[in-house]
Image (cartoon, rainbow over the protein chains, first blue to last red):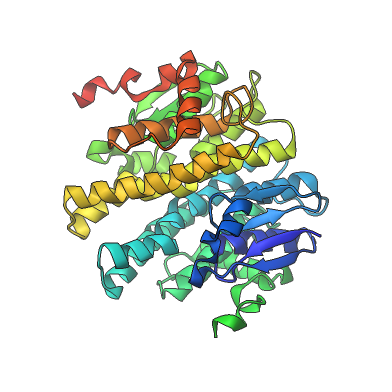
Length: 216
Length: 216
C-alpha cells in the first residue's frame, strides 16, 4: 500500500495530501511527530536523508521526498485529473506559482527557522511574529500580483485545481494561524475559497488529520 | 531574441545560465542591478511581479520567472541534452535534489533575509555569518546523504548533468564566498568539480558575467 509520512500541520505534507485527494489516490498516513523531533530519528533519516516531512513510499517501494517532486511524480504516473497543464507555458506558470510559495514564502517561516530565531538568536515572540508576518505579506503580495496577470480562473490557473492550488491552500492556513491580515489579497483569497469548497482540499486540512487530536 | 534578466551573483540566475549553456541556447543577458534594488523598480515589477531575478523572456514574448520553472520549460521546448531524465522516478529524484537546494538551503540565506537580520533585527556580521554557515551545513549534509543513496554517477544523477547540477553549482559558489567548510561533503564536491570541468558551467559562473566588472 502507498504510504505518506505526514504531520498534520506540515504544509509540505498538506500539499501532497491535497494532490493525493484530487487524484483520488488512497494512501496510508504514517505520522511523524515533529514536536518531539521524530523526523530526526535514525529510522526516519534512513527513509528520508533530509529529515523532513513528507516522505512518499509508492506500492513498488519507490521512496520520494520534496513535496513538489512527489506531486509531479503522482501526476506523471497516475490517472485522474491533471495537476499540471498540458502546454509548456501553462506548466511553467503553475510551477512558478508553486515555487513562489515553496521557495520564497514557506522556507523562511519554517519551524526550524522560527526555532533558530528563538533559541539561538534569543528573539521574543512578538519579534518572531513580526518576522513571520513580514515574509507572508511580501510573498502573498507577489502572489496576488501574479494572479492579476492573467491565466487565473476559478483556481490559480484556469478553472480546475492544479499543483499551484495545492501549494497556496496550506500557505493560507499558516497565515491564518499566525493571524496575518489577508484583506489585501482578494484574488488569492477567492481562489483559496474555491479550493476549500472541494472535498479534496477540505479533507486534507490539518484539523481533519488523524494526528490532530494528539496535539490536544 | 531570447533574454535573461540576470545578476552575476544571483544563484537563481546562475542556475538558469547553466541550463541555457548546457542546452546550447544563445541569449541576451539584461543586467538587473540588485545592489541598488533595481529589481524593485516599477519597470521590472511589470515584467516580474515577484521582483526577483531571473526573468526569462522567450523569443515569442513568453515571460517566465522562478528558476526551476524556467529550466523545465527550456527542457520541454528546446532540443539538446535533456536536463531531466526520461523516467518518472529519475525525474522525481532530480527535482527533489533541485528542491533541496532551491527550497531548503538557498531561501534562508538569500540577500533579503540577510538584510532583515542586519537592518531590522540589528545583528552583527559574525552572527549573520554563523546563520549562513548553519543552514549551509544542514543543507549540504542532507545533500551529501542523498548522493550516497544511489542514482549518483559522475553528476548528481547518472553520468550526464541535470537540473540538479544546475542548482548545486551556484550553491557551492555561495558557500565558498561565505567561507563555509566543505570537507564533510566529498561526493557533493566531486560532483561540483565534474560540473565545473564543463564549459557550460564554467562560463555561467559569476566572475565571467558582463556585470562582474561593474561590482569592482
